[in-house]
Image 1 (cartoon, one colour):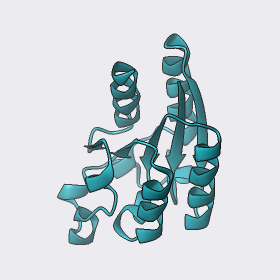
Image 2 (cartoon, rainbow, N blue to C red):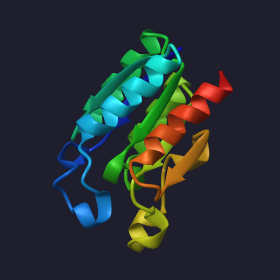
Image 3 (cartoon, rainbow, N blue to C red):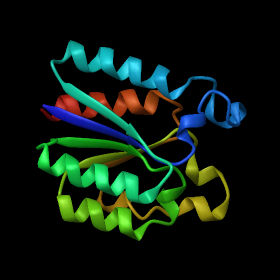
Image 4 (cartoon, rainbow, N blue to C red):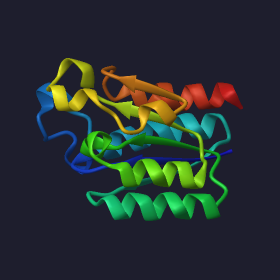
Amino acid sequence: MRILVLNGPNLNLLGTREPEIYGSETLSDIENKLLSQASENSIDIDFFQSNSENGLIDRLHQAKKESVDYVIINPGAFTHTSVALRDAFLGVNIPFIEVHISNIYSREDFRKKSFLSDISLGLISGLGTAGYEFALLSITRRG
């Protein structure tokens, strides 16, 4: 099984960006946990972070060519703004789980709308960085 983990804008700042909201773990910490979890389940996992919408879309298109089975994505602010990212997911037809470290529904009103949730397999929001691990566990159980 092949899984791609996509992270959107500003997630490269995890560990230092608003730790009261996002915690102290870095993106590398999250990736290392997922690598370990994937290894235990014989899963091929790849990671990509971009602060640009086109970078995420291009990587998603590449994932289709690579026969990626699932995507785990934390789209960051693009959650609430990117019709283009939504269209890319519809275009490549790769099932995905949307992850948010903070509870987007307990924050500003504009964060309560996701352009991706209704086309995702599921949404994990507000469970901290463990949400990535829960997403991978869910995919593992799907087979």
